[in-house]
Image 1: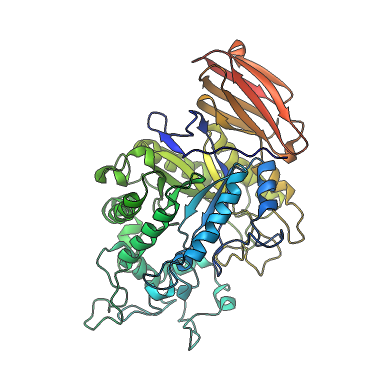
Image 2: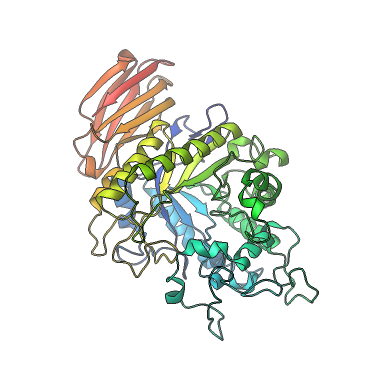
Length: 519
């Protein structure tokens, strides 16, 4: 049997900005995204295992056996509130079943209000249909001015997915209507059904930002006592508004974050914190920003009484030079240079803010040698600083807004369509790492060439132990080690059975520096 774990609320040590459990150990998350962008807006927990849609007990066992200890789960606004002011508790209870089931196997959940291109009216997802119009007086119809106006169904006003998928979804962010709707969301008094810069009566009485606050209040109230939940990701990949009305926002993203995005986040944080003071609130920078973050030191919550240990600066890292098939363009230095730059910028911003950090999206890659090399470089960077991360994504879940979608033979997930593992990619993502640290970690660099883990930490209380997870694809790892420093401060043992393997590093002395290489 796989050992089932006890759970405590995850907090952040304000001195180290590391995630902590209530037993005093630091925790590093290696996770996966699980976001279902179309109805029923959740993975399938009740059906059999499959390579596309399931997230059931068999999946949880697989994840645990491969060292995965968290899921970023899409809790979708249309699922929670299919109608204005109506909370769908059937949906929330189904989400809770997934979260509680994962928790039995030592897997935490980050609740994610996911969006891409904001609405299904714009070839994306995120905001319910009742909360945004498919057109707005005074704004060019979608998808102008980037591409010609797209034909809509005369009844649903939706665009056929087959038509949407002919264009990379990222292009749709540059359309006038999508940018306008984002600016409306950021504005605490904007009714998206009112004409833009024109006279006229609104078709509906509604303030979009207020409706999103209601969503977060309902979600936070429902999950406030759930110890399997890490926290709440306010919104996925916010953009800097309307490219055509305010192009300067895309040049000076720090100013935009300070003056526009931060007040928006503060209003969302107020709604969450009023209902739930147990969980961490995650917030993201402008997704396209390449400059220093513009948020206040201590995060948006600092000015409204939310402590830094209940905030996380969450960010994404993707190589932007990809070919039409979703592979990194060669030579590989193109991606390596970009990834190193983005990592440095985002990491330095997190340090400046004085907050914990979480890379809650990266990857979205197929299973080939070129993509494996890109993943290896990214994960190696993360491991040097013992960063927490979540790969995009565990399975396709019918994804409609990545290079790989239901029409693709390849996919960004862990499995091929026939259910077999994508082993090149999976071995990188399930490499051995220190998940629970009895002390203070300084680094946990993994070298994929030599297949060695170099762990640096300061020991905690005598008798407590650090855990190094060994995934199924790394069986045999951990039986050899050499100390660079602190040999007499710890004892290394192997805890293994047919399903699970772990290196235990037990503290024999407190507050001692240890550096050990394990292979």
